[in-house]
Length: 361
Image (cartoon, rainbow, N blue to C red; front, side, top):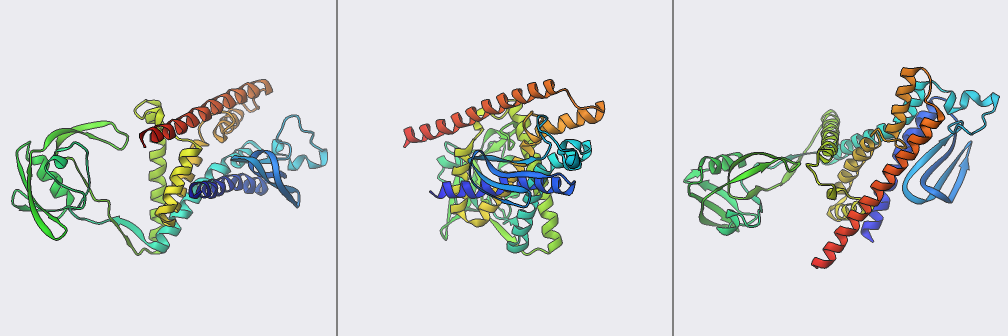
């Protein structure tokens, strides 16, 4: 139940923000907006304010803003031509389409800014505390445990994780004597580091080095920040997460990251529930990350997505005339087929994860 509520909350907010971007840019450029819907398909309920009907529709995985004169088959009255989407300049239509992804990215900046301004900026706590032991590693074999604090290696005092890492690396496979503190007691353990592969965040091997199989503690503390510092850090955080999202897509295309890692609505609901249980700050961070993902994925040059429409508008600007209706129709059909296939695939991944988890329980 917690996952369902978190999923509805997170996805509902992000879809609203995305469609709000289209809506406000349309209004800015004088386009008449007929409908603003959260969800697709049959109307569950709605209400009309002014010239726009606001809807909640049956299928919740998305939304839309219907603008006057947007469809080629729609009749546009002569006196309302100036309010038609189709009659606006290419750059104005480009701005309206781009507004959705842009608002998702700006919303992430806003979320991170509020988090940093209220709770402070997170920074890692410098320590020699072990956060995790890799299964089957030398560290597990010699009895090291998560939570142990390393005090010295080969009689050399260590106070930072960098010193720990360098001491193990420089051992060149020789035996190391470690003094660790565990629940107020000091213990001595010895082991021989082994040569292991070093992998980056995407799982690519970037080198080898001697390691014991210990991972540093991920403790953080929050430091009070000024409004300017909070905004600067929020912008940097959004940029970094956006870069990782783009690189994740590239690595998936390069087959570095297996396609089985793709998750759909069920996976998002699980993660949202877990983040809510961990606290509202975690949920807000997850929402910011998901907003960045939504903004960037919508910019992919796939027909039906905003990115596909932006490609069509760019081609129109270069050719000084729009693409033919037949070309647009074929492209839209291809886009629908791609998205439909992708949706089936991510649902398959989600269900397969649930089945595997059920069989292992």
